[in-house]
Length: 464
Image (cartoon, rainbow, N blue to C red; front, side):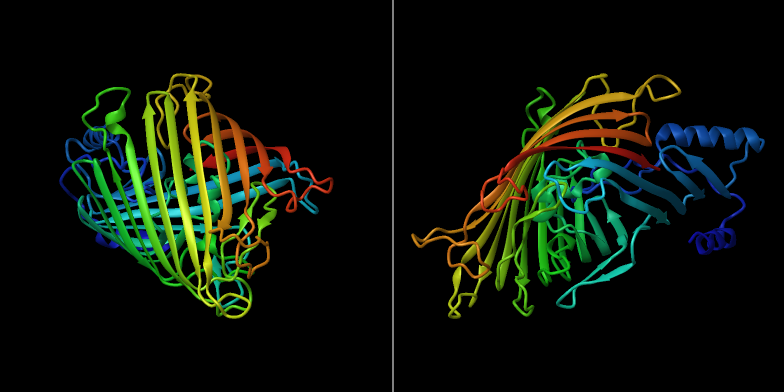
């Protein structure tokens, strides 16, 4: 993968160049709410490199290749090229608690490599690919999934205007846009997993104003993301999405409220009924992925709405988010009549406390990393969430079939307790105890008819 870039470097690198100024540090979260994939070197690192270069060359500053490693292994050439290599491996030991059949309780949840870079301080790119499984998986209704996670390029004209094209996350949902390696829990919330779009192919403009007090992202995408598709569900078609964040409490200099981000997002999608199978959204449990709500037949417009808040103050942090999806059902009745829109909603409220006193950051670099300075950082976290499905009641009986005039309500309430051990910048251990409660006694995976159970998961995470 690196042969072509290295050949280009060797061909173009100048023997002498001016010193490189310290680049602006990348934030933990981009303007669209997604994690920054290519953190730049800090000013301290740049000064150290410059001093070493001067000392080793009698005062001259070489512009050839140089290797650095602060957060990622990085190759630089003067001011015009930066390449960063990354990798992530997540291994889970799970006890779902609802006794699923043929369940593998030890799984490699993620196994990916990435290459991020910047050319001439104007063009940035990101490539991330999963190493497990087949490259492309054929789905029904001409739908596909791919092992490529991120595959995009970006032109940066200014902080206020950047243009991105390729495959990346649709700008919707704070929880979905936060990299899972930087999340406070092993799993994202149910809403972020099943209602938010996730990645797709398209284009987006985004930027920020007044530092980061106001950010925006707006994009047009081929479909409505990986989360809407499965082996049986084709998902939506053309999608337009918009996300805004603002620090609405900027005048309040108390408990770090002036840095609290308030976000809102909207997405609209065309959904067809060309597939022989229902094309609506589904609801599943956390670990065993038992489907407690089957997709219904839909056609027309799919609208997504969402709002969120993100706060932190030293070692404390809190987040909350609400999202809703409505699917039109034009001509989907048993007699070809139009039915009330199907609805899906979800919310979560979560908090975390770094008991070792470290400041909350994403990603977190412990003040006393193991084994150099101490035992790392310890964090406790809790999250309450709910996801549910229904349609507008009309007074008619509710049913659970895929063409019901009134959809029988059902949902899942989840409470998660977590302990995180950040050994150092690259290694993290997470333990989650997860309590689930299905709201419909007729849809439960437990043979004895119970609708509540506890499960647990232990994750070992390595991120380069």
